[in-house]
Length: 127
Image (cartoon, rainbow, N blue to C red; front, side, top):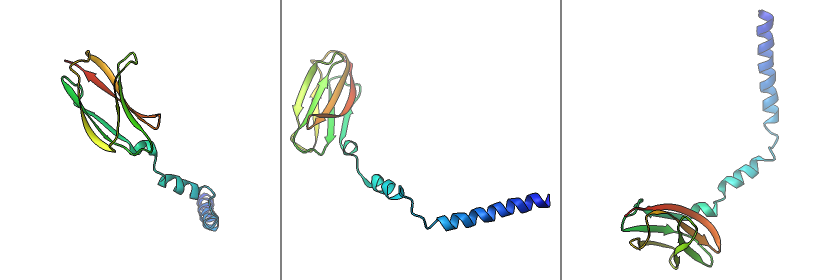
């Protein structure tokens, strides 16, 4: 039993001594991890909110975006036909959309910036 305890103690002491020696060695990936965590994802900055959901007479689209050239908002039905398009001039706004002419069902609201699809939200219309 004493030999086992002596063996365990020596392994712990040797391991801690080895760890402290290697603490001064620089990890080649540590800087990369720190740099990547400070990068802000362009897609996460863009905000698109639709309410109320489900909509009966109208719904609101609230957006807050950062774009370079062009921003476009489009609403599609379930078969992919575009039922609403709007070029966004402002960087943030709240738009009221009347849905009295739309049929009941599921629709998709997409935000495109510089021709790239960034966000899509679902909206249910139920009169």
